[in-house]
Image (cartoon, rainbow, N blue to C red; front, side):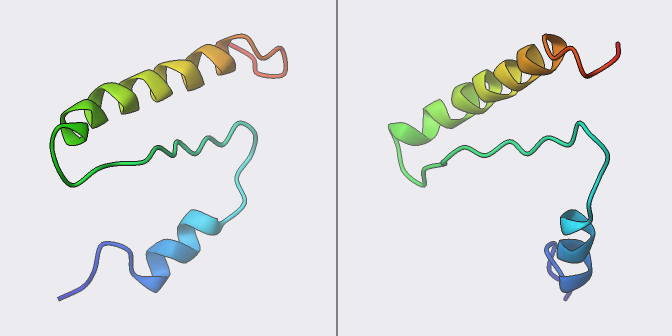
Length: 61
């Protein structure tokens, strides 16, 4: 059984990419009640990342 994060996959993820390369990190929880809010938090973090990219003058539309 191959793991989703194999050494090959990790090496590919660490490969330098052209700007903009975005990583979205947010803590997650295993148990309720915090677990139920994880989807909302992730959605908010992704929305904020999109907003920052839209307002960055170095990124063409």
